Length: 427
Picture (spheres, rainbow, N blue to C red):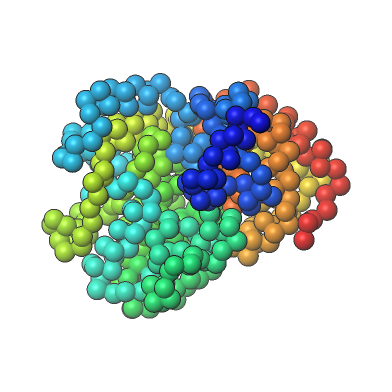
């Protein structure tokens, strides 16, 4: 028995499904034993058997600099030497808050949490408290964390498990959640407190906003008095220095951040104008709190990461994404595989089984249903390239993915595609 197999057996005895998040399970790619990571550096991870993998998971986008970046490691080590948590304010949380407010047009204040789920849950509570309304609008296939009201028709891990939502969520909890098609501007009534959207959908594969979609949401919210929330847990400080707001020019009322702002440590954050954030306790009646919010290790890591991310860094990262997309698209065209490789700025998608560009949830679901992604995942893993074990995730090239790494990826992808031979859908 290998070390990996031993750990997998032990994990299944003490963890549901052997994992601490369903997206880490291999169930949506045909089952089997996940690789257990022993260490990581730059663009790669090494499993407990010593196998090196070019990694496009990068902790689902959190490690934008690559794994174990020296500046982040040094910041965490220094912070840890002074203690790991205090339950009291620190300078680092002020500095991180100032950095986010400086970068994102429209953000006047922020509140830190320990996860993206907490951030979106709290932002929606704030929207309801500030407007006095109860209904929320979300989009089919978008994922905003695992708060009860947001699990309806969600993407990412919920979709990977083939679930429409989650058991244990009473119908009454989602009764005020209205689910509408992505890339279509809905009617927004005066009962709606907030329209919650991923400005670039990255939990049903990668689906960019259609021209006029985000602008239309801004207009619809302004007309009805509803608030507009950008869930930028993925896109925040990933697609541009100021996130999707800078990139699209559309300014929402509320933002949610995570991943990049923690430098690889657990973190979340929601923000808005100073006037709106004054509804949050202790200034206002909307309660939110957390023992580890603003944790000194996470804020140190996040600051170290953001300080590496200037306009030059984003230019490099986008050039990397362009090189990766072009190479993969050429490979699948040569192999005759029905695969689309969309790109939005620094993000790359992979719709295996899609013959046409995917613009909304039905197309993403149809592509996933062909089973081609699972086949590609397996043959790529055999060749030392790690994608997320689910067809609704995206590829996260990092600043550590240099030209040599990208070229090696494309070469291995070509070999993997050729190994599939004549493709026949599994459905």
